[in-house]
Image (tube, rainbow, N blue to C red; front, side, top):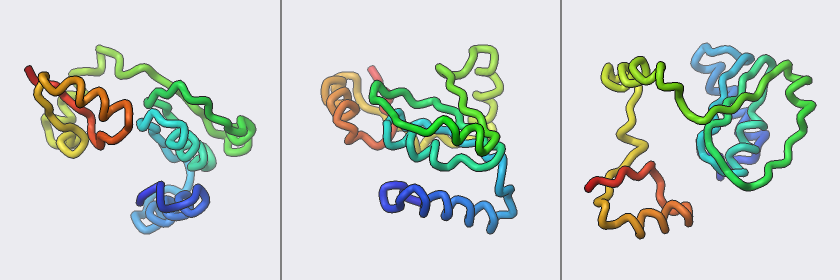
Length: 135
């Protein structure tokens, strides 16, 4: 699903339909917002269902306007974090090494000499994956 092609209501309906097709619960979703954009955070908040947990991982300086009462109405919660605690690194790494989590689609390597180009692409949001600079 491409959130840019669907309004909030249509996106929530599409996710709900996918969950139903896959035999997954219609409630108590875990929503992870990782984009670090105001639009992404608003979209993630709009996906709240009864008992949902919204984890805000992405960071933005932009202001996001939401109705906090939705947390009460859905008996949901929103939490934030600043990354993974170091004591969880081994288990997270095991998930990657065991092939249960694939990073390859989400990262790209760039030579360190291209750092200015990479920073420009990140700031203009034209880069599609997480850049890893290699000396």
